[in-house]
Image 1 (cartoon, rainbow, N blue to C red):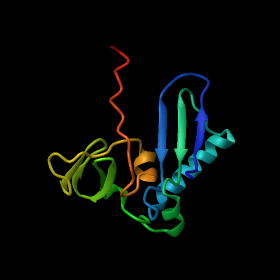
Image 2: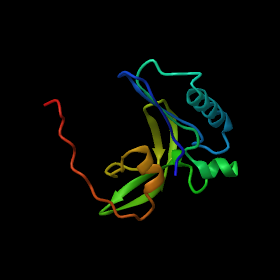
Image 3: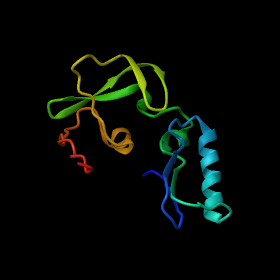
Image 4: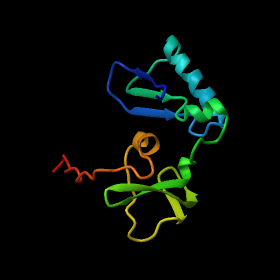
Length: 142
């Protein structure tokens, strides 16, 4: 289970999610987010508008062990769909920014990469797991 702290303002506004401990041996983010959560919980800080969700230890087992990752470095794998199952595939990555990552090897044209929420991809999917494909959702603005 992932430890989560949620804070709300009285009015509408942006929703912000802060994650720490994705890599268990990188302690600075964990410590910073624990301190930030404590400041909000004590009332010393408050939100002017919107919502804030803080998850200081996303990969709690790796944080507890003080290791980079436990089973797989989740930044270096993808899940490929094959029929009604998924296969974990290691990839080599290249340049990246906050929205895009270059995949240098590990997937080829025609491979179907599984996408989903962070929680599903990192915590739920396992190699060989059966999956159900959902049709694309219709755009609510049409």
